[in-house]
Amino acid sequence: MGKISRRQFLKKTAGLTLAVGASPVLGKFASHAAVDLSQKVDLAVVKSESPDFATVAAVEALGGIGRFVKSGDVVVIKPNMAFPNPPNWASTTNPAVVSSMAKLCIDAGARLILIIDYPMSRPEQCLKRTGIAAACEKLGSKKVRVSMKTEQRDYKEVKLENAKLLGKTQVNKALLRADVFINIPVAKSHSATGVSFGMKNIMGLIWDRKYMHEQIDLHQGIADLSTFIKPSLILVDATKILTTGGPQGPGRAEKLNTVIAGTDPVATDSYAVTLSPWNNRLYVPKDVEHIAAASEMGLGEMDINKLHVKKMEV
Image 1 (cartoon, rainbow, N blue to C red):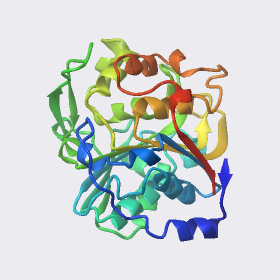
Image 2: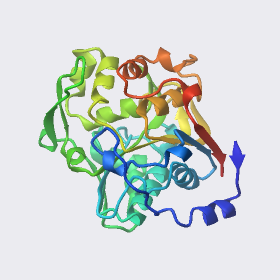
Image 3: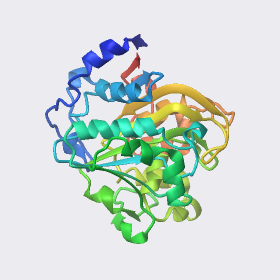
Image 4: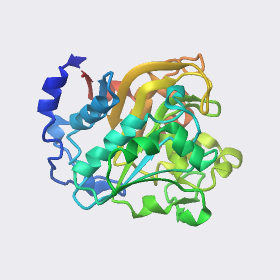
């Protein structure tokens, strides 16, 4: 893992908002995902005691925020803020990671940054106790709005043409209108799926989660959902991970000071699996059924050995 000083890092990233040219990529947000293939980095894994530094360095390693966000864009950011728990429980996304990403989007010229989730508890308590609303408010920008989408009118039915089981679902309207979607899950254990990373996190963008849990195979449903909801950028918050007691906690929380960034939902989840035992069990990516299902459907690369992983310590 390469290590650079914070002074060197700040100097290197002074021009973070430089844009790169567009190239065609499959997915709703394709026009925003261009990269020089000769310098391609599949995953950036950054370790830092500062979540802000880790977030910025991870995005920079993938080509900078200008690769993903253009001037005038509407950006949807989906952290996990579904539970009314403090950040040190590691059941919700670190507020500093979310606010740092929002700041990058502001600097890139985004017109509007919508930070949204569908909570599992009282919305006002989730917003307050996770610390995400307060962290984003400190940015002092009217462009940034943090909200919970708890009414059915906030969702619109869509067809999932390439799904195996989940033929249709109701998706958050804000996502459907966005130019850019950034997924920022926290890395944690989960009682129903073993682990919860990026692909599991997008369930917070649909209305009827009960149907997925009770009426179809949950793992295949998550993979099916990933055929439609395709992030422009994924940041797995592993600054502190919940290794037992997930998804809500409390459980055993471990401080890793790490952020994983990528554009491939299967690859980012597959790497996150390797961070720790989960619920006292060691997994490899194929052990997690929704990761294996998504890989089988051609939604990304599950074999970490085939990935170009750039590791940094800041």
